[in-house]
Image (cartoon, rainbow, N blue to C red; front, side, top):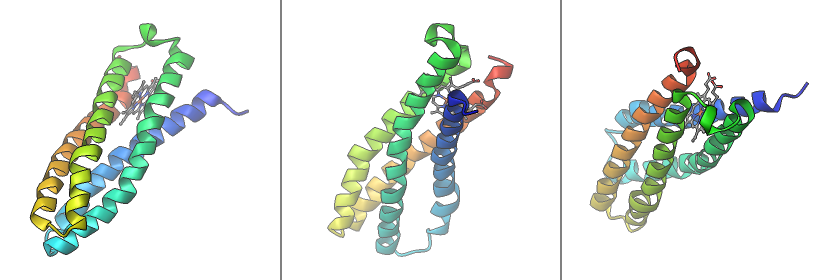
Length: 155
Ligand code: HEM
């Protein structure tokens, strides 16, 4: 029989895996592999990668808190009853979402404009800011997944 809570937790966990796994791949595997490309080619390629990946992250930035809050209400009867690890997940999750929104509307928007006008030094500058924010979100995301997956055994 269809179980809405089980379905929601599957969607929630898959969303976390796609977001954090995507950042891991981009930062740890793709970034060092593109180092030998000329700046115009490299920056245009990052532009195409970001356009596709960030569209998914917007969906996930909606799905994670919606499904998470649904689980808190459905399983635990509200935030007053939840264990510490859920509060940590909720707090760090919102920090990650806000950081992503800042990344999207400030350095990514400026990066796109610079790539569009072939201003490679400016594009490289904003790519570096994007990199720093993604590194922060990757670290937070790995910590949250570790806490979320283990929390029921200690929280
Ligand atoms: C934004 C607010 C969020 C809320 C309210 C929330 C809430 C929850 C709740 C209630 C569960 C079920 C926990 C259990 O029954 O033991 C859960 C599981 C999980 N959450 Fe979140 N979450 C949020 C954000 C995140 C984020 C940002 C990530 C990772 C990037 C994440 C990763 C996970 C994972 C991997 C699980 C599965 C844990 C397991 O059962 O093995 N969550 N979340």
